[in-house]
Length: 320
Image (tube, rainbow, N blue to C red):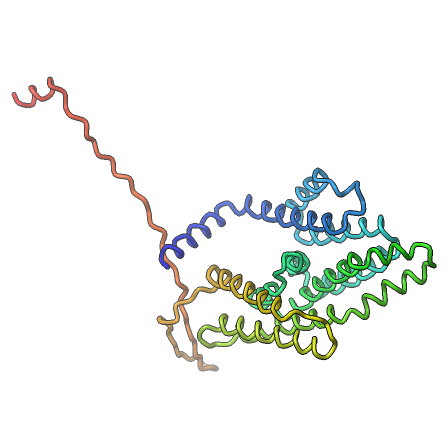
């Protein structure tokens, strides 16, 4: 355990020292992964489905605010959909615009949740995002998580029904619009998942704010149980065809991710908890202080030992 704490301290020291370089690199990596996933799942417009274009745009994102990554990802998605179907691009563009207005109005600082939610869906670990946002965010973060869920399911619906939409090319424009809009509005799996993740964010936030020992761990476990229950209840009520095994395995993976987060952000030593009471003219205060687990990184000192033997001439002089 001490070795892990030393590694943690070294990593935090390195990040604080080289933050000006590490933060742009992480932005570049996030933008690169996001754009590559969009191109691999859509890929209808050849002009932007190129590695050189993705690298240049990701490099631009590394020097811009986080919200710029959301805008670029939405733009790439709409360009691919425009090359595939104008109706799909129009409907999903309207959905993106509505989500941007809600997201920028209520939770503009939760950009990471909006970007990571679709990416984690593709990587089969979407259950980690609501847990993490409940631990480090606010109840308003539920809106950002919900926007990410809706964005993923809108694009996922188009990719799933691409053959049907392409076969409707000879039909009227209104019929194609109706097919896409009806498919999105009646997507019960999207609604149930967004509701489950939003409830999880709020519940985890409320529990981790409690003044009890191991509040973060209790909040994570309660969030996982609530998430599974809401998804299964939604499956029973609306027939969303949620796989029980995939939900359980996904939440186990999310639990492991939150353990890593807790180690770096909220690692407390409850054995040294102190309770302090004091008062002033108006209030009486009860304070519970729990120290963080820290360890100083060892300083390596190199001791130089001179092992050279004196020359024969020097030895004779010293003897005299």
